[in-house]
Image (cartoon, rainbow, N blue to C red; front, side, top):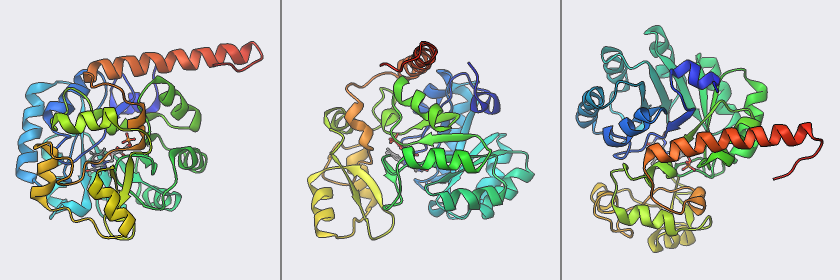
Length: 315
Ligand SMILES: Cc1cc2nc3c(=O)[nH]c(=O)nc-3n(C[C@H](O)[C@H](O)[C@H](O)COP(=O)(O)O)c2cc1C
């Protein structure tokens, strides 16, 4: 089964792995691309030399397509990264956390397919005006940097799909075949998974974080920095809950963040995680996650089609 996303990106399964600082590197991204989805290399860590090395590693770890995210807020010189993308023949880029008119026209001139990440309908209009090929529509239920007042995918995706005729990758709450099938019903052409990928075998983060996702319920996340920048949905550590309750800013001190990411101290920094953690019950290999989600998605869609043909909707 093909979608506009599989055709445009040259992949088999319309699942894109989320760009996540320090996590979306070659170990995870190559596993996703090799499994038939699209791996993405991050830039939000700001560690551009390390990231260039990760792109080189990708070439030896997969011969499948992969992409790159240019997180404008976190890169000192975004235009130099555009040159890097072109020199390395990366044909798909998502731009985020910044004005789409800055990078999109330049990337388009270089023949690169560009999607901009949008958390609102207004943001989608700006990205369309800048000339994007498609949109990553990011609902507020997802993990990571968020619009604190943002709407969920259930509201955003159909509204944006009805207004703009471009391919949509829905991001926020997608984890399995049933949720993927819902994305297609909403008007998306593919999904992006963040929290599910963090909790995969190939994710490089500490096992304590993966286990916190497995143990966490759908109400065990918090938006910190609700009234400061950057607002983020994170796993509900005691520190995150206390800052939220006191309406105090969350500091992203690099050492403290690394203490969580790679030291496994869940109270040191902040572990970004989405509400969908309540639907994740084990740490699994990427290939198994993608294979089962895509196969189950098609089964759900077929079953719904059959039941509609029979004159009733049933589970
Ligand atoms: C640990 C983590 C880090 C993230 N970092 C980034 C990032 O650097 N850039 C970005 O565009 N989105 C980032 N996100 C958001 C994801 O791209 C994606 O939109 C979101 O995870 C989708 O929702 P889900 O967590 O329900 O799958 C991050 C998400 C997580 C869970």
